[in-house]
Length: 492
Image 1: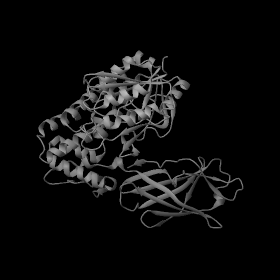
Image 2: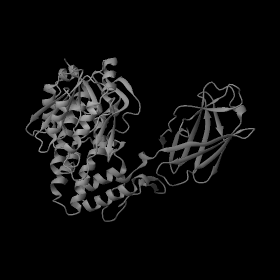
Image 3: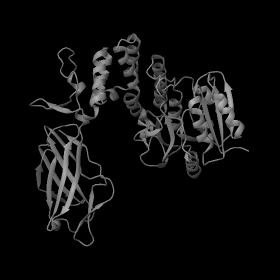
Image 4: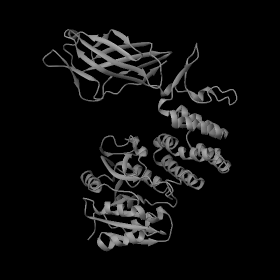
C-alpha cells in the first residue's frame, strides 16, 4: 500500500538522539507514513537503533550507504520514497505529534506545492525560539509565495516543511553534496512553487547539540565549514539572480545578519592566537565581495563597524567590538554629534579614534532610530479624559525636546495640549465634547522633534492596540482591540 507521506531521515553518528527522533515520528497523529532512515556511514550504533524500529514497526525502513554527506543521503532516501508527500527530519531532532497531520492537511485543502511551519530550538530539554526563523511565522498565510511574503527568505531549512512529491519531481529538485545542502534546495523550492502554505503551528524541534559533539552546527566556524557555507550562498545567489532577482537584497541582508557571525567567531579565535588568520581574512573579503554593495552600505551601524575592521584585518579591535556587542548590544546608545549639522552615531568603541581613523559614516545610525510611543494610562476624571503616555526615541537616552499629540478619526484632527512629566512622560486632557460624532475610531498621533530629526507616528495603547471608539451611550471612550504600529516616518 502506498503511504500518504514519506519522511526521509539521514543519520550519521547521532545514536544518543536517534531514539527520541524516531519515537516522535512513530507517534505522529498522521499514521499513514513511511520513515526511510538512511545511515550515512555511521561509526556508532545508530543503524542498530533504526533496525530495532524497523523490526517493530513496518512503516520504518533502513537504508545503508558509505559516508557521502547529508545531501546524497537525502537523495538516496527520496529515491526509495513512495509517498504522495515528502518530508525530511534530521536524526537528532524531534517532530511534534501533530506536525505532519497539520502540514499534509493544509496541502490537501489548498493544493499548494509545499507547506511550512514554525520552529523551536531544543536546548537542554527546553524549547526556545529559533532565531533563524524569527519573524517568519507570526501569523498563518495560505496560498502565498515568497515573492509576496519576502519574509520567507528567512525560511531556508528543508525539515520544517512537507512537499508535494509531484512538485518535487517536476522541478527536478536534488540535494547537492556538501554540508549546507539544504539552503539551496529550500530557496529553490520556495521560488519554484506555484503557492506555499504558512501554518502558524510549531512543526519542528531543532536540537542544539551539547558541547563537544561533531555536528555541522558545532563546527560552523571552522575554515572548511565556512568555505562550504560560502559555496551554498553563491549557489543561492546565482539561482535568485536568474529566477527572482527582487529577493537578492533580502537574502544578502540575511547572510549579513546570520552567516557572517560564524566568520567573526573564527576570526576572534585567531585574535587569541589560535591559527593563521590569513586564509580566514581572505575568505571574509571574498564573502563580502559576493554581496550587493547596497546591502553592505545599509547594514546596521554596529555590523558595518565589524565589517570595516574585518576588511582592514584588525582582529584585536574586531574582538573588542564583538565583546561590546555581547555585553551591550541591547543597550548600545545612539548619540548626536555636531553643532550646525547634527549627525547621529552609534556609541561604540573606536569612534573618532585618532589611531584607527575610521570614517564617521561607519558609525552613522540615523536610519536605526525609531519612535517609541505608547499610552500608559487613560482615565476619566468626571469631566474630561486624562491620558499619560511614554514618548521616546529608541536607543537615544535623552528627553525629546518637543512633542505634539492629536486625535484623528480619519476626517477630523483634534490637537491636544501637552504637559511633560519626567524624561519620557507626557500628559494631556481631552474634552469629550470634541470627540462626539466620530465616523471611525480615534487614533492618537505623535510628532516628536529632536536635534534636526522629526518622527511621526501613531501611539500604541499598551500591548493591545492604539485606537479608541466613542461608546454608543456617548459617555465613555473604549479601547478597540487591534494593533496600531508606532510609525517611523523620519524627516530632516
